[in-house]
Image 1: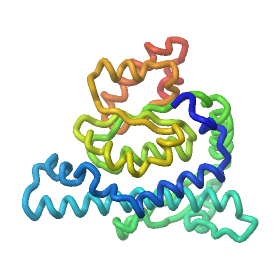
Image 2: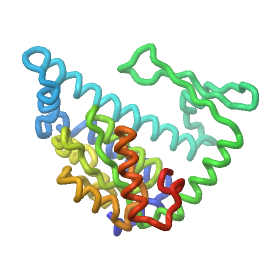
Image 3: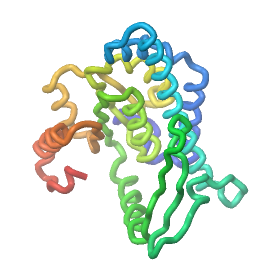
Length: 257
């Protein structure tokens, strides 16, 4: 991943949108929903059988597909709007619903997902916070070239981990090594089909959970710049300790960020 060409951190927005569209096309056209029988294995994980297992298989595929397409469409629409908002590109719904509350700007509310009718969200921002985020993003683009992110797979939902991959690769421009959760190692098969545009470019790789010691070696590698976790506070503290030992020059605040 470290030798990916061209470096992900240097890609223009147009190229990243192209990658996102290729991934979206894979979701529409490839047989990832049957790869490795992952949804049946998920039902087994939940100890379901009969009609309950069949319902779980169907629901798992629907939730995975909807969550991934929602994320990718949102990313593509927002980035294309940023690139071409002066040429008639439609403004994303979230940005179109803007209002001022005191010194803050509030965007929304909009629906969370088509699978969660009636659930909405809104985003509150301040001008000072926006400036800090912009400055931080500019610093990251120059400092993260040649570095990778490690995503530690989530154990509770099959779609969460691949969303974490999307967010790191597409939004933050970090190549990703994914270590699957031991309860969901079978996700490697559908992920490989969906994420083939990243794999062939050298921006994504995945591995199984082998042991705690191997995970420590992975997290301690000098090429690792960022670790993304979906898990408990105890897991987060354990990862922070590993990173602090591997990077003694970093402050505690630097490691926690």
